[in-house]
Image 1: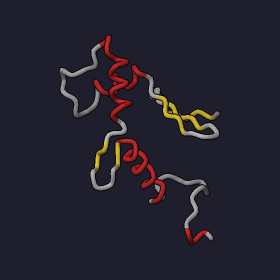
Image 2: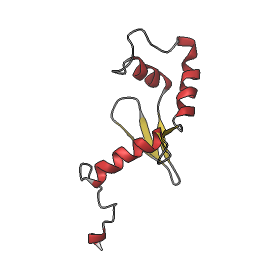
Image 3: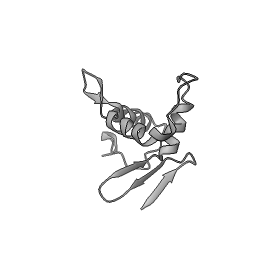
Length: 101
């Protein structure tokens, strides 16, 4: 299984059936603390880090657009799909465009 990451602690893997995104709890809570739109006094309570992580995992599936039914995960994929389609990310021959036929 091949691992991908850029030194941030967040890694992605691909197996035969799934894309796995691994975010260590300390990376998630630190990301929240240093989130640019966070309030200076807001941080995750030390003994509540697992609960915070479960809260985030649960709400990643919340609807963000009532017209499309999109959720936070869909928004993440939509953003990267746009980059691939616009040529900002090289698809390495994996995407079939009709003109390629």
